[in-house]
Length: 329
Image 1 (spheres, rainbow, N blue to C red):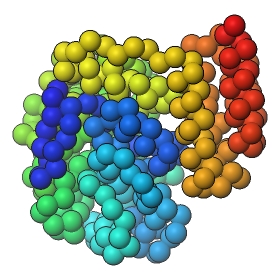
Image 2: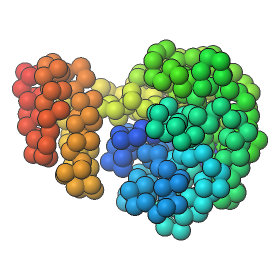
Image 3: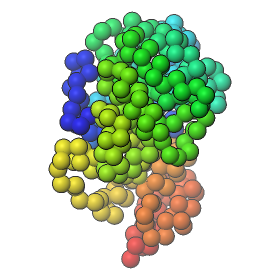
Image 4: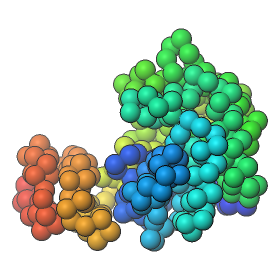
């Protein structure tokens, strides 16, 4: 989205999209990114099969009590009929969402062993059938997107074929991570493989992988010819990255770098909301990894990250923040 785009009747503002990441992109994290300019945000992935079994935890992953901006939900599975049923159940539960995304990119063994996630890339016709089933369940008005990789491994670079299947069966946009499943997250990404997928389809394509700066976003767009970028880990602890990318896309002056006060306020807000929504006992173990990202570039970052790993109560967050300020003096 160099400037903006339209998906069905949904007008998308200029900016990068915040990628879904299991165990990280909960409601508090998504709201923070949206408030700093993410074009849209995506839920943590939920199992279509678990939803059809009525699993409360899976529904909870999708339910956002106060979504900020455009909100997508992501489902994973390997059975078209189950995916369609799950979508209808989400609608029956009254869970609001603006975009439905299908996960065809997760490399985690526990997901691929069930035939889901990036395992789908080995069967392009099945990818098409998944999209067709989702489109039928959604109807024609809701945008349908797919998060995928460029292939399974070097011998199965199926990204172009999968992309064509998805487009032909009703997908409105693809977000392509520039690695195979075999590569997991080992750098670098393959920009040429993303470019080949973009060239093969007529629907918008987002390039994804290793974007940590506004300059990196522009460079990836130039190398791939894509319509926009999706950012994941690069924005953790740095939601201001979305503001910088938006300014770069629009040719505007970059915004001021956040102050330490602003960084620590964002950290505190995020963990406070996590505790409010999940309860301290569930939120704090997850908050440890989130807090570590805010320590990037600070003096004494190594010792601060060790402190992050020991967070047990919300009151510990204020002690961490006090320590961060002391070490910068």
